[in-house]
Amino acid sequence: MISDDEVQDVARAIYGSEYDSRGWDHEPGLLKERFLTEARLAIAALDRLRMAAKGATREPRRLVG
Image (tube, rainbow, N blue to C red; front, side, top):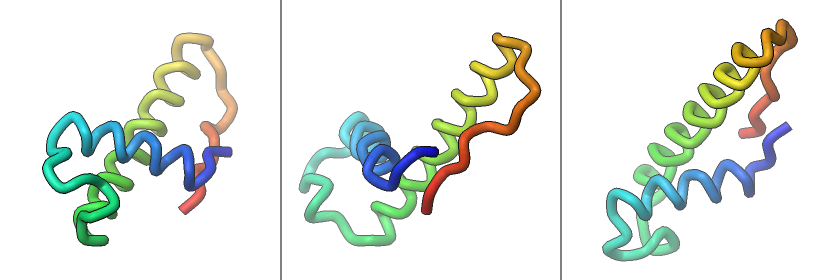
């Protein structure tokens, strides 16, 4: 299971690669939510790719949040 903190770390990294003008902590919640959603999607996509590469059939990790 992926924790909220791990999702936020990925979201901050995506944000930092695109913006980083005011800093994550100063951004409005709506913008942060956009990046958190992108982070969850990116993590889920990586899980699917890893499972496909291994030929696994189990469900991907459940994302918290």
